[in-house]
Image (cartoon, rainbow, N blue to C red; front, side):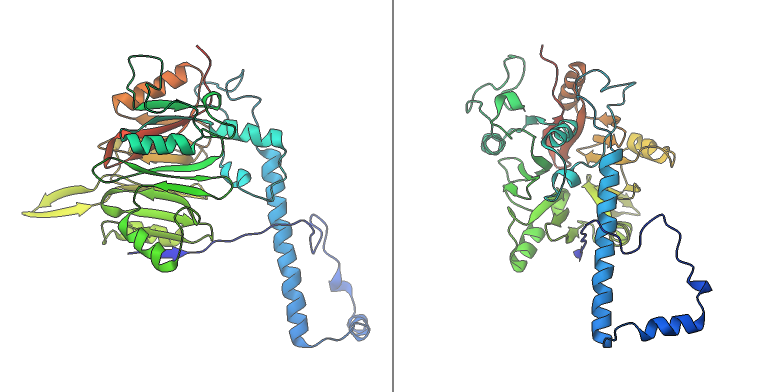
Length: 390
């Protein structure tokens, strides 16, 4: 089942009615005065009046959107440095919000210095573990890596050659994770995983095959996977959630009768969707399958189904005034990662990934995201801030 929805928005400055001012006391105006005012007002036909009213309404909506942007910019805290003094306190890695909206807005009034700070908070480094050499080389190339091909990427001989850390020092200007908004690992063919990522400038790149149903529908609609797709999450048996530059959203769940999933997707303004393993259980001699997933709304709500018990307890125990989850990932088995808006994180990951996360944190870095796939057990991407030299 595939459903789409549309979102749009624009912004400007001037208000039709000044804000924070008392309304005029029209109630005290006499009937005769109002008739006199109308007699002196130029006449117009109804079509012109409606057209003018719609124009004024659009201007007001644009002004309100601009006001919200200015308030977001004013009250969002920009830390002096993601690895400097004060960037971490009691395990909370500073304040964090969805910087992708600001950095991806072509009309943004942020200065270059403010943009650089936001990028640092989002995480400019990528620690990548992809077994398929062709997929790994493609990812390194698209991220501007200056590392030599087919070499042991890390100097430590104890680390696998399929592991590489991309950072500004070993990539071309604007490379590594500096301009990347979103990344996803997809289940590829027998050769291993595929991947997708999108950039702040609206461009995207896909290596490997998209989920079959999504690919067919995009082909029917004449959409380009490397130009129109801006966000993608995939799961077992072709499950997917996709967002496009037009604002449309499509999704497909491998379990067709998952009414909870489809009800939330139709009712919420969805921000993130991740899919976990397909769960099979038996009752009265018959086998049943059910899906696992987490959905995050733009208003801070979260919904989940069949997630690991530790993640379930973590999400269900949070109070209404606590920081909402901002990023989440589900992997094989009971593995997961979650980051909240206050920068705090929690994860239960395979030893290879958990060890790398610990190494990053011990060197002063902050983990801002982990990319997993429920059907790909050995490949992952960790996004993080720069670490201290050692």
